[in-house]
Image (tube, rainbow, N blue to C red):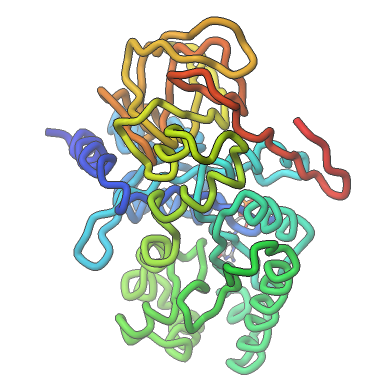
Amino acid sequence: MGRRKKIVQECEKLMDKPENIRNIAIAAHVDHGKTTLSDNLLAGAGMISDDTAGQQLAMDTKEDEQERGITIDAANVSMTHEWEGTNHLINLIDTPGHVDFGGDVTRAMRAVDGALVVVDAVEGAMPQTETVVRQALREGVKPALFINKVDRLINELQEGPEEMQQRLLDVIRDVNELIRGMTEDKDYDWTVSVEDGTVAFGSALYKWGVSMPSMEETGISFGEVIDMEQSGQRQELHEATPLSDVVLDMVAEHFPNPLDAQPRRIPTVWRGDSESELAESMRLVDDEGEVVFMSTDISMDPHAGEIATGRLFSGTIEKGQELYVSGTAGKNRVQSVGIFMGGEREEVDRVPAGNIAAVTGLRDAIAGSTVSSVEMTPFESIEHISEPVITKS
Ligand code: GDP
């Protein structure tokens, strides 16, 4: 069996264990390193070759595609990651990094429960950092911080340990100020901290990273990082403390799984009857409940046609189902259902609640549609935040 097929099978097994699923987005100010980090994670999970990671070529593992040099858009991918002896399914939704991105980013946030906020150590928190943090919190999505390009502090700016530490602390303080200013629900302290393990530092370009838990595990401290960077031992640093492990461990440990997230998020994103069976089924991530899916993105595939990607909050999606699409009359028939692997869609027999699914056949669906097996109150419309004006979709 090919490696890719094995990964698909592994993902299929994990789809039925919501406690081991993490639905996440990476969000950042433009050029802070979101694409480079995404590639690192894919390479770390064995989805693309290690050599291509960092060159912004999210390449497929299929040999023919590598030979043909086809680069693919890693917009949505699923990968597996072992943490504390248990394999986890990590569904990563990429978010556009350009300025005119409000709608897409917020839509992506609807589908996920955790947002990895990437901030360039040299530039610090920028206006779009604020926007993405705001979008995440508004959707009830928990943030964690990755401070990128730390290699530049060491090699270009030649900062000493104290200066560097101060700069990193300043970034954390700024991000926490944004979080504190925006958290309406005071029950949740979602500020990030090094001690809690919700902050990691590193270099997406040179593929190394550190966090409090990683330093304890590998013994590689900040002092060693500085020494190794300065003496050009980047490959050794990558091997000793690989960025993908550090970040994916942080994701598995600190981001909520759908069972934890949905009871909290459903009242925020859906204003239907909270006493209904449907509400209960969404809160419980019940794969035997009615199908409730929210499409967050529609893309075009030359073979399969329109693909609706989104979050399945309840039920199980299967080929042949007839589903209602909010705002339209009649039903659409599901032609196929799949998950994303290395940016490519893989058809599977069924996708259960708690996952990100890619569905074809939903010809009436648009980004933001509620798709369901019973007629229902649609999800709240997604607010587009494109600073400073806020408009409703
Ligand atoms: P995005 O716009 O957030 O997706 O940013 P990219 O991943 O495209 O990175 C923007 C630029 O920063 C590219 O030229 C990357 O090679 C560079 N870059 C990304 N991460 C690092 C890093 O850790 N260190 C350094 N020195 N450069 C980086």
